[in-house]
Image 1 (cartoon, rainbow, N blue to C red):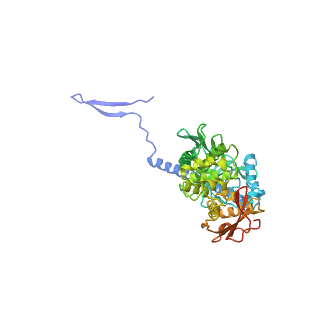
Image 2 (cartoon, rainbow, N blue to C red):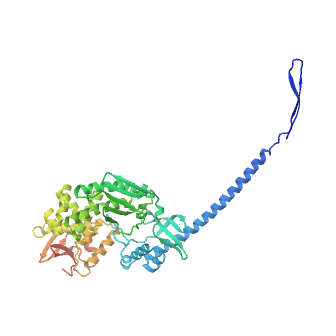
Image 3 (spheres, rainbow, N blue to C red):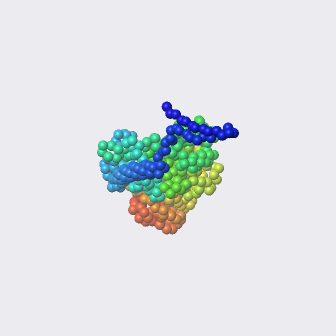
Length: 469
């Protein structure tokens, strides 16, 4: 308990004045300079600890990136060398579905096929090449690394996933947690889009393009009426898997799997691919409903061309449909598609809708046929190109398919063909052109570039080998 005393004196007027005070002295704190020094010391210690931890983190990140880059390089090298066993050693066997897809990716047929991407359409098979790639970013989530890479020319960004095992890092199936929360967007009453938060910046241009192509396609063909069409951008669907359309749902790979332009361009290849796929699936579904059975090659080629024409909106992508539109008008496409159930072949289509007959106007007929074949080769319309090839000639179709695949890796322009003479003898036609064509020059089975041979098969004229004609 403390005491304080004050002594006061007063003058004649009664004014008091304090003359003395006794009490506890106020304690004085540490000098300010001590606090300043302490703060400097704490800041230095904290900064040192942060820099030390930062250095350790960066060193660990560099080691992790180097380890995964080594696996990425090994995968690409094994694929390029055709070493399926070495490639599969880098895949995660603990995820059976993933591993089996990788097995299909390196079967002998895929390894023998060239690593090309068809111009004007997406690859619809499982032979997706394993390209060299550069690791750009690695985020570790438990035992799984989320790895952003750039690959291809032009370069695109993709995500891969690698799991740490007792045998090192193995590429594994996509992890759903990478994509974040689900989002649903509706366009009117007919279209529903489902994707995830991480895809949002890259999906929006595709959503707008798909909606436009959906309207264009439905304007000339009968779109499904049982409820809305759902377009789902799947986070667990590798891009090498064929897109699926079933029960009104089209499943497409996420842009992070399809490939985002590394330069930030808005012209992402997957946007055109997605637009083509919605047009193709709607058209194929319409044709199947019309004919009441699976599509034959001629009908599948027409669905492919129609989808390419609708999704691009320009000429040069669909040689048959381009000619139909030029002669009959866009408004006739719906009627032409419906008529395919009765037409059944390219020859009858040309007679009915293009007014061309091999018997009445052989020069015009075969000139159109040769130019359709050349334009299909240039535009990447494989279904149309193979539709015109003779399957009965030994080795011919496989040689022509090899020609098609090789041509897709180049940008060579193809000049229109002009027919000088046509000699029809029974079921064989000898067509002489004014100059050599790409159809013959690049093919060892047809050394004479100015003369092509066609054989009549089931009503259609097929390009055939000169030694089989």
